[in-house]
Image 1 (spheres, rainbow, N blue to C red):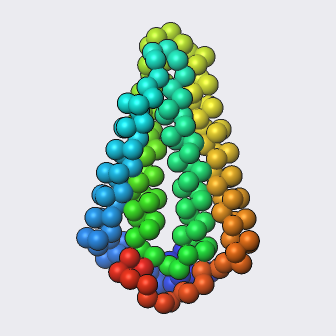
Image 2 (spheres, rainbow, N blue to C red):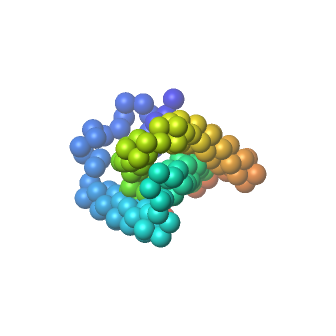
Length: 163
């Protein structure tokens, strides 16, 4: 079975050798943009104290959907690439979604005497995130089938962002 990057199992370079400056740079830029987008949404749509943190919930659920969809495209449809997954998946969506804000919101709910809302936040976020992930995978695979796509163009050189 081939590795996700297209090479045979065990033929991948060691992790340290694969993690180049360009990969780190695209992760950093994606992280900057994703974190900024999350912060801006949090400032624009803050949750009043003691209420369900809908903004954090929506960010995490949409991020789960988008990451699943992205991974179908990166691993099953688009030609092999080094930078798209690093930028969009690890960088942007990794910093756009937020475990820390989710837990801070939960702690605030508990601190304001709303344990039921805190429990809905924890378990509802987990369930909705899982459902969004399954939906993202399904939508991506439907798109793949509709296009008849299976990494066409593999091995062609498109630019520095594609191996």
